[in-house]
Image (cartoon, rainbow, N blue to C red; front, side, top):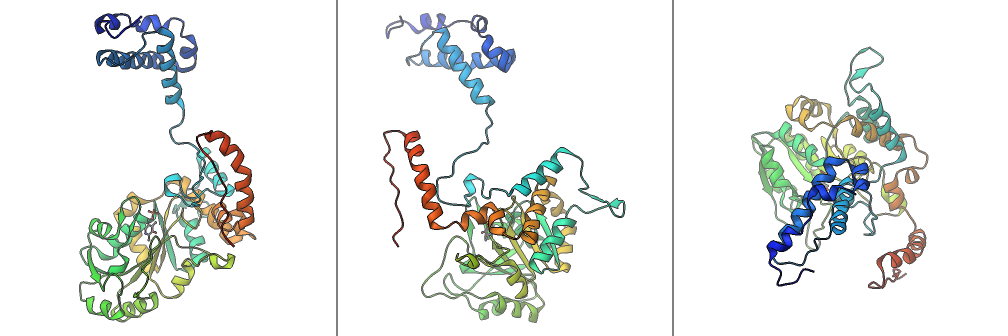
Length: 393
Ligand SMILES: *Cc1c(COP(=O)(O)O)cnc(C)c1O
């Protein structure tokens, strides 16, 4: 038996050798291979050696060491990125992967992943094609825009717009709209990396059209509006609306962009939900460029969508940054399938899981909670006491 007084050198000597541990460890060798098993045993032995030297309690028992190694092997073999339960009540949770894809999008990913595809091949003409043809057409139809392009996420979309239209020039933005989105997306920093000069306009709570007019000079390249999706300025406040900004832009021949963040393709107020800006409505108001995410309210794959006037979108497609920010075939397949649902589905709120979650009735949510309560209580054990709190009528 080890005791506090046993000199640690003696205890170290009692640790079995790797060869000895490998004998009788066929269970692991068969499943994980000799090489991985050997290195797991080495790691398990190393841990014990360290603990013995630092005087912590540690067993030198062979069976226990093999068990430690087996746990390491099993943990290492399990996928790192895996399914979890989302019990937060937040439908679009960035830390939990945002939108759950529609079945059609998953089917599209599978189809382009398991075979060759016409990604950049035009089957009609037999010539080289453009990877964005299919999503561009759908995006234009769904938003009324002249042109569209797609990049990796909305942060990339904003970066691409700024860098293409305003490199080395000025971009006036209201002080009330210099947003930070979780995960280090901040308008002033993106502006800097896009090589544009941010011109802060107005004050935190109030910005007027006159402030924008005063900020414009021959260096102004783009007027920017940002949807404050994660906060609200209330009280004595006023913001410049898109229509006003568009009229100034037209007068001075400066394009106007709006970063909508989670722009919606349909009006959520149809379902009794708070209104989120609808991309087609913003285009109709005269915005030159709109940017929004593929995996927020839209309910598709992670992507940054840019829609707007052809003159600007074609410049973006020629920017070398576009090549670095472009989407892969899996994203394009999933996005096209999701957009197709918006175009053709007769019951969109049923076919897009994100919209389905948003439009559930209170009764449905309560019934689900009642169903979940007993197994959840069981899984958490006696240290927890769960109760269902219903919102007051
Ligand atoms: C979410 C958001 C972004 C960033 O979009 P990602 O798709 O997460 O890169 C940018 N601007 C606004 C206003 C947003 O809400």
